[in-house]
Length: 400
Image (cartoon, rainbow, N blue to C red; front, side, top):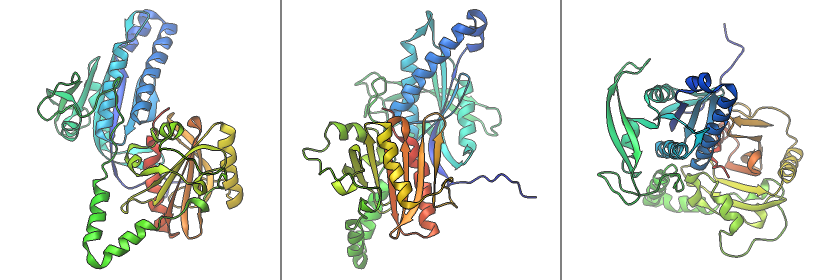
């Protein structure tokens, strides 16, 4: 018999997963009392959430003193883990140090309407359970992925058998190297928070290779160049501002602030949006033309001064497209509703087709940002490709 509850799934993706727990929290409650424990918990959560926002992670679930966070790469997950440890090392509550253990693993999972599903998530949780206070543990998988990307020292913590994991697992303790110090396979290519630089996104190598292959195929070369040159304009989307183009060197202060929040993998493709691309009331707008291998052609980001300005821009789209209440999903390409990822991001979500193109528009209400993406074509595969692309990219807006 079929269940009434259905669970939608996207294609498997590789992400970094981080779990963090307070150590000795129960003992702290018993010795200090409930009020002191609440203060400790709130302080700890604020420190972790600040690091997660700076690293561009998405908080999926928080229960008591435990955090579950997903990142676009293993390196950003490790950066965040080190940032958390650096932050708590400088803090205390009522003279008592904040003691945190962290575990990181990376692998393929499937994102469903109920969250991420896969052994990589379970592994990260088990690794966290092995970490002592002040310790970041990673798997051999993570070490292999990031050892040439980050100035980090990995110390072998021996083979461990983890609950629910059939095979033994090699765990490493990860520690940030002092600035300027190099170790074999660990060049100081970027700094760690609290001295954290912009996290690396998904490499653009795949897009570059696709373009080069296209150019090398003689008869198809001109076709690839024509496609790249004929990106769909933004005018079919929400109503333009009509306020005249922004002048001056890109990026100006407002654009730089917005660009810093765009997912790292898109930033190299972004520039100033034209007047026709801007939204009514936006104080800054970016247009990012993506590579031929992406499932979206173009994505725009717009920041608003007020929440009301953001709401007005979305209302114009809903009215013009006559969108009815519903949840956009793999099988629902036309609706207007809400979306949320844990306590990290939430906002409005609109999906529709217009003029032979498929659109998805979403907001980050707390940051007063509206993003919209378009893909040429209105076939079911066009919508599914755009929706799955959005399901991943929406997670990694960096906090203000």
